[in-house]
Amino acid sequence: MNDEPATGQVLLQMDDVEVGCFHDPHRVVLRHVHWRVSEGDFWIVAGFQGSGRTDFLLTAAGLLPARAGRIQWFGQPAPQTESARLTLRRRLGLVFEDGRLLSELTVFENLALPLAYHGIGSDAEIARAVANMLDATELGPWAHRRSTALPRAWQRRAGLARALMLQPRLLLVDCPLQGLDRRHAGWWLAALEALHAGRFPGLQHPLTLVVTAEDPAPWRSPGRTVAWLEQQQLKQEPNP
Image (cartoon, rainbow, N blue to C red; front, side, top):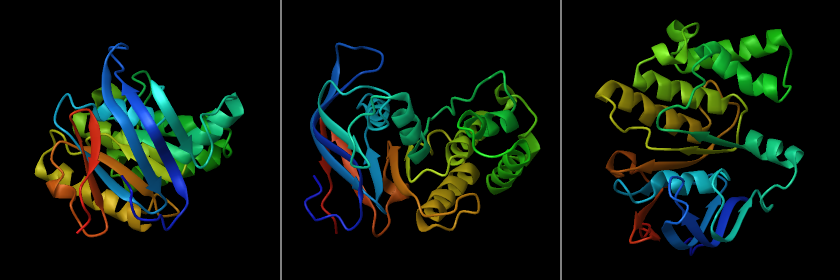
């Protein structure tokens, strides 16, 4: 995996990693994963249902401990202190397929929470940042509705907006096109392309991206790398 030399800083590296299952601690979903994500990469990690896509992303995000092997984020091992964990959370974003919003909060409050928790900005500055992100993601009409009132497609989009609030450098996105109609799917394809290129209005810099998918076809584009989760292995397609 990753046979060619990296052109940017390595943001995420797995060395001989064994990935477990979040719902079954005794199950191994992936073995001997050697993987490197460098700054500027756009990875599509494809796999059928049950292949371990979500478990792989949770492990990559540091939310599910690896059963074996070593993972480094931004050149550092797993953080051991709360300060180090908070620093990693600001640099790495994760978007769940179901959004994982806090149900008792409005969409506006869900987006404001990461900035307030990390002590970034005054109340007025946070409100402006949230308003800008709501505009960028077309979530304005839903701003003051509780997350449970949103249709599933908009919950997922709100999950992306929340993940972007801390201006991460690396973004992991779990199956963003799953179950979406053509309009919403088209928005995601365009939004992630803009995020990668540094053209998204809600972000101040280009993003390094890892996207999972059941079918990689909609994501294929020059400069992107496709890998498959199959037979408990992560297998990279040859670059054209």
